[in-house]
Length: 251
Image (tube, rainbow, N blue to C red):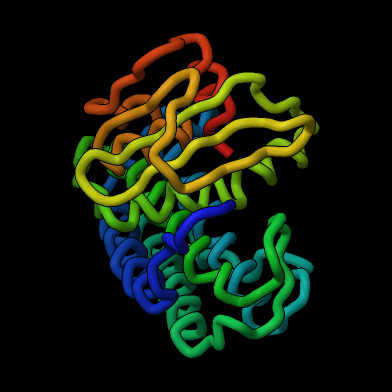
């Protein structure tokens, strides 16, 4: 990734994580646990909660020890809404407390194709929790807005480490086209393209084969495969090229 640094301060990510955990826990306490999660095929609210709470505990171990976790930690006392909500909140709050004291330059373990610095964890967990908060709200019919600045930062993270991880992990060939992404409500522009077998992303205003324009939240959700939340974004130029890039979403 080239161009000016884009990401927010790690303490901004921690604050967002705390907020999103609280929203998720509140939703779980009163929501239908059997409601399906549209963009996670086969999952219900209950299964998404178990996933998210497990990820929080997994990340807590990695951030605390600097090593790869052997498990995703403890499980809820029962599958009741009250116990699931309390379990999710407990794990998320514990993670936020640790990440708030973490030296962002400290060495750590993580599975992503970027330097092994602890600053990865606040950002990654803020984005993970935000996208799954949207999933929960979408499933339960109570959608609220994503923070535009955080969504723009999430787009940056997507291109910096989540898309490269997806391509490497799943042994996928990269698109042969280029994509320009342009947030219209907050700062954020990127050009993504391949040269040989290398994904190159620059933070710049430049013409691609296709452009994806719109509010940061809509673009963030589109890149993450949440097509139901992408309203307000538009594709300009080669529609097939844009579809090729968006098909990689849902990492």
